[in-house]
Image (tube, rainbow, N blue to C red; front, side, top):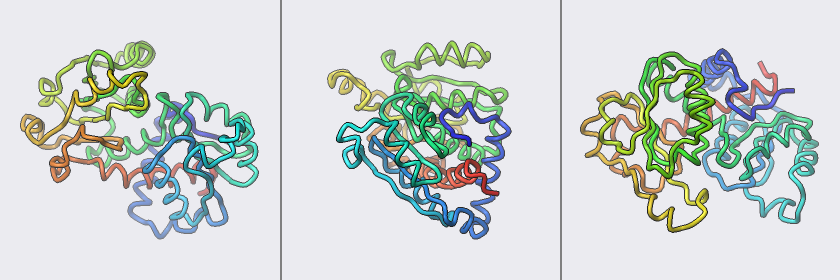
Length: 304
């Protein structure tokens, strides 16, 4: 029995296979409509989510399976003080696979030790979000036709952004990736990411505070929101929340084939005026998330 807690648990070959499978699902949806008939996915979301939870549910329904679970901790027995371990032991009696989001780093890993069924980490605190990373990789592959030889800029909250941390880890295994880290000093990528991933793998990267100065270099721009829920005090959040707002004017110097990604939800860091720009890929990303989760569910359930 195999779970997915961290994107680095998948080899690049397995990632490529999942992307190929997702592309086949996009091309031939009818072929997959009964693949998980009789199977049940439990969605255990101890933290709010729209896209991730609904895309897992849509993925399982489109595979012909069923879904059970909860969308906030208050609607589960954890509100009465039940431990994560006991919740997992219970739910794994009812479901064939579990997608779990939790505000505490490491909670899904603990869950794997108590579960009878595969666990998919649907986000744990500021730590990991492997299925968003698979979504991002599928989107990049569909837009660029490759997962190597490009320059990607990560912009916004790089300190607490679990999607950023996961994607940097995944991309570090592909060739000729250049990374530009664009953030205020307070929200820079954690030192451990630089030391354990970027430096260790000799990835070319630099840190800047201005988006405008690097825009012409970028093949991909990965925007993130400044997350209020990750701050310890409101004053710091209010001071930094509008640090980087992408507008049509800021795109004047960008490449014609730039791809703009965002894991969503956005607050105001991308102007709605950018939505109609052909370079905006973030709603394609949302749709791709469903297909790559279909591929992952099948893989972990051993469905051919």
